[in-house]
Length: 121
Image (cartoon, rainbow, N blue to C red; front, side):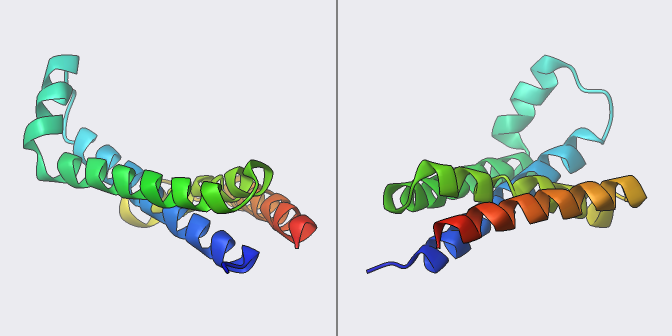
């Protein structure tokens, strides 16, 4: 039997993977002003874009597995931790600013997710 703690962990892994995918997409799209046609072409030819798509798919599979084992009202808010991971990855890998307001926002999102997770246990 899978415990809710394992489901929370699995969902967090899915959120990290999807955040990684977003970071890959953005890092590739930062390489110039691309037209829609160029973006569509890069989806099928660029290694970072292909890796991002694969990561998105893996995250979806993991998320769906977690969703099949726990209530949507628990899994989805925990998956929203991707907001936290995207912000941290963007600061680390894309050199986007991480100011006090963003840190407070991350803390508030974390507290909200923690409350939801604890409310089920």
